[in-house]
Image (cartoon, rainbow, N blue to C red; front, side, top):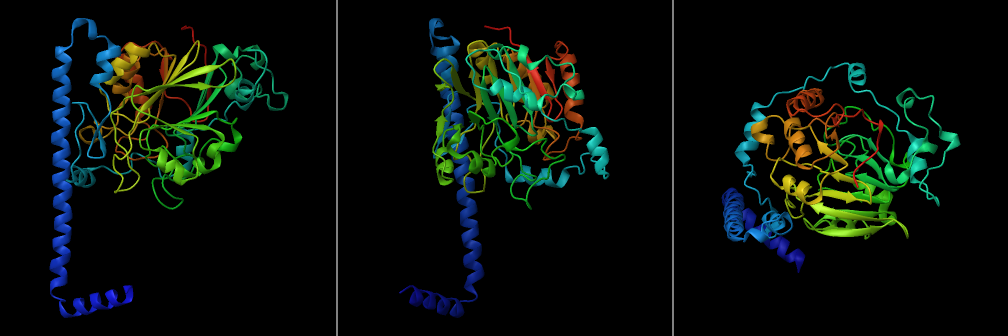
Length: 437
């Protein structure tokens, strides 16, 4: 039957060759019109929801205007016609014309030197403090960590001023090791956290996508095994399918709404989808329990042209007994961060993006610049922050060394204490001792 249908189709094409271009043109025009009209309908409905929420916000009684009730409602996730949209007035959807204009007018090179040795000198790699990471991740009967004799790095120049690992209190220590882009290995009160993992040389495949300026400072297998992985959204530079296959169901994956099915197709089922403001408890052992909270960001999702915004995007807050860590992922600046800070702050350590922000007219809605990142730091009432999402894959127009320079200027502008918000060295393990209970 199928062969007969195919033969009839060929016969029709031979008899109507002149109609084929017209049919193709009509099909393309029809699809384009449908996409444009659908986008316009979604934009119209989105604005309707924003206006309705603003109107209902004004009618709340003074007793109901605290962050717990009004903030959550004001910035609840929004899905229209099967697609998630940003419920913020600070967001603007990009048009095809915007993208073409950016491609035509964008600068090239980002100041990257042709000599690889110059890049190596400008972006030196550090070796993570494996002795410290392994010691803090060990399960012991006490909060005092034990020494890993075969991996002591006291003679490593990167860590000569660090305290001895056997003197640290696990319950009062945070480590943060930036591995490139938004990938960090973080430890908080004995919990091992991996964020937005990518270790490969290019973002998409070994032959496709932007290439790393510097290699990853270590591989996944070199690190202590993560307990949980936080995935802010499904863009290729934030979610590496190779890492998903390697870790599989040996960890718990915390992801935004709509991503569970993607993991299931990769054979991974130990996945917890969270909506904005949703909280769950993660039990590490009989004594240690952590709150995992999904919080709003202003961004978008998609791994191909067919799945745009079919899943949500979010930031995550991990709260222990004495400390908390905030993983932002990608975002443009929006007022939701002030609500997060009022509701869950102060934050012990925030991991905030500071790169991929030029030109501002095109990037400002989806990527913060260092000035915006410092505003988020202040909104969260963060004690410390580290700047990530720079110096790894060049996907925008700023100079490749501009993010740390602009961050220093922003910290000075907002009178931050020295060291409160830093652009870390790739691979360097940083120590924090939270004082907030």
